[in-house]
Length: 329
Ligand code: KG4
Image (cartoon, rainbow, N blue to C red):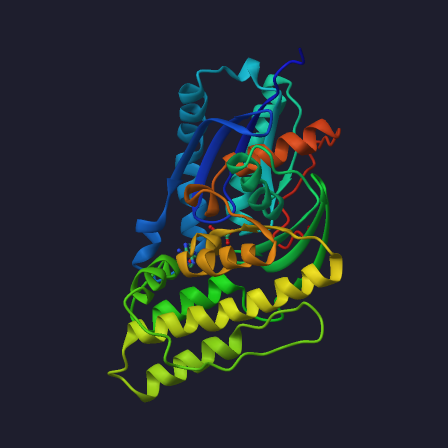
């Protein structure tokens, strides 16, 4: 029998300080997420410098909790796998530096993880049977792209946003209609009480790229012109428009590649309207996967899972590994 591989994932790319131990890339032994949302709420968004300082205060405690909850020692860990991009540079540096120090002091391999690769890997934890190849609809606060997941460590971006990331658009809409930060979950909740009565303008491209800024601006203008507008109707109309764009492009990607397995990923994949609409594709013979809700938003279990796959193909990093804020897949 092959020996189990334990990876220690460390995540600090934005406003969550997280550490997790995952077995063989698929089984969570612990998953600690220390969120800074209440700290940033009063500023209406993440303040990078404040995020870095809070990561520094939390990181040691969070990693110790992850080891304790998994009931393993550092000695038993096979690889230390931190996020090294994309994200806020000061925030990334905290988790990465901590991971480098742990790897050096304990003589363990250091294996860097791309945060987007981590979001995709959240699906491997939720679905033990899921294997590449598949298409991934990646939707987060900083990224929106359709990725052809060729294997566990091989990716091709087929299309991406030309302006706002979808999460950014959700957060902006939430702010203008007065829902506050973080906006996505609040738009999701309010939209359930509305009717999609507003037909918002969508931008189409010949390729698989996206644009969300036109839809976002239309929402802002409607809200501005009609102060007593029904906010729930506006939220569901916004969700309907952006989901229409996502579905149109994923259908094009299916036609282009012939791949009929798709997985959702990223914080916006927690959205209930988007999840429902994607599930409807199953009646056309498409198999749709979506991560458990707690694995959609930032966490370190997904990073430990991606770290496992990087580790088993032999990826190793040195202590020179730096944070890369705009790291691509
Ligand atoms: O993936 P994530 O946690 O962080 C990044 O890596 O960017 O995504 C955060 C984004 C935020 O914009 C947040 O508003 C959005 O995900 N989000 C949602 C929902 N939950 C989180 N958007 C729509 N509906 C949700 N239920």
